[in-house]
Image 1 (cartoon, rainbow, N blue to C red):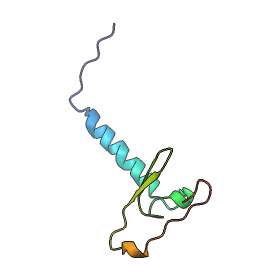
Image 2: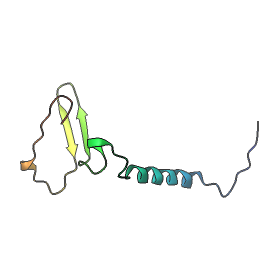
Image 3: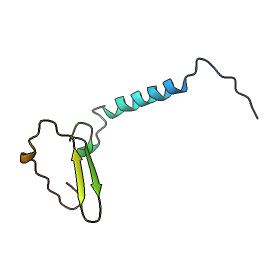
Length: 77
């Protein structure tokens, strides 16, 4: 078994946070397009499905709920 000396300059948490920042920066890049579900395209939505119903939770601040309509076709809302 090899022993590896701990390097005080190595901070694994800082390295992971740096990686997370780099991935977030990459995803915001306009050259990286994820189609209609890309960042900023639509409000964040969670959909919970069961055999008899579906629950849709969306962030839509300032939206009058009486003016909201949801339609679906196939697997698309």
